[in-house]
Length: 195
Image (cartoon, rainbow, N blue to C red; front, side, top):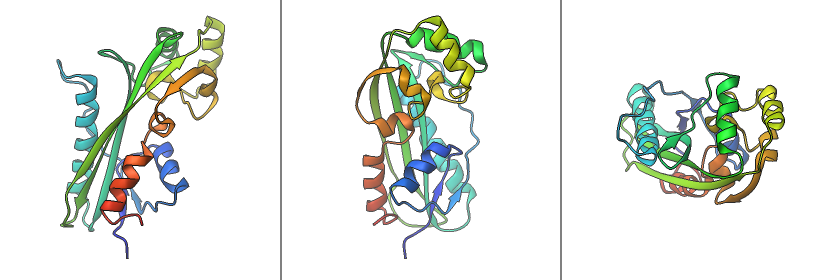
């Protein structure tokens, strides 16, 4: 029997990606941690720190044996993070800043044993480059009005209407959605969670 998998994320996109490829998630337990970025920490170090902290928090809180998978996704250009917008005006500002150029989407993930289960923790990080079309103010306003990107890093969802904003992609699409399936599935197989 395979050990249970606990997803330390409230993201329906991550759960959907896993179930779409046949991974059984036994429990969804979102991790509550401070997600503010410490001064001087690079975006890549920050996203890795968040994923590992989320996995560890849930692993320490659960009783049954199993594996905890956590992930965090950021949208960034250089040292600037484009986080989940607080309102429509911030979403417009984010999309205006990203329009007509390239930005990076990085997802870090961590898989850790819980409940006294033996096994090494595994982690990784993937980055995909995304180029937006040149967007007019009316197109940005129309997209923001859909509400689709208001709860997403970078203020857009590439798996939805937001795909129309994208001109080019260099890297893994599943990473932009929220979980790089290739390396995560490899880690789950190594941990004995997924055949």
